[in-house]
Length: 74
Image (cartoon, rainbow, N blue to C red):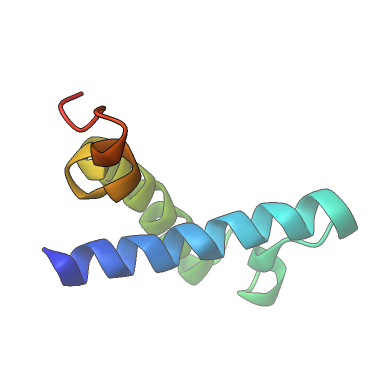
């Protein structure tokens, strides 16, 4: 499960950086991946979304900060 968590975390970083690029410069990573209609761009967006869902569901079990604050049982 640690490997899945690490991959999900990396994908969330990619997603977050993409939103930063869109917000600051109006540049979307999907342009580099062949546009929004490309299979590769869609796959990346789906994986980033699934990573967010995974982290949302498993966050309190793996987050040291939530456990430290007593929120680990959420």
